[in-house]
Image (cartoon, rainbow, N blue to C red):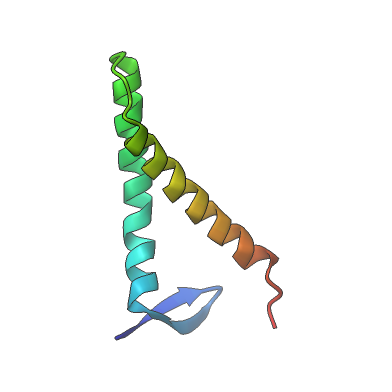
Amino acid sequence: MQTYDLREGKMFMVSELEFWKGMVRPYLIIFSWTLIGIMWLCQLPVPPLLQGVATGIVVEYFGERALKRIKPSG
C-alpha cells in the first residue's frame, strides 16, 4: 500500500512503513520522556531498558532527519 505525503507543496508517495513510523514515533518520544520525568520527580529509579528505548528512538529520529537534510536533493 502506498500513501501520499505533502511536503514543500509537492505530493509524493511514501511506503506504509514510513507513514506509520511518522505517526507513531513522536508519540513514543513524548510518552517515554514524560514517563521518565514522572519517575525522576517521584525519585523512583528509571529502568535501564526504558532509558535505552527512549534514547534510541530520539537518536534514530533526529539522525534520520539530519541525513535527509545533508543528502543532496537532485
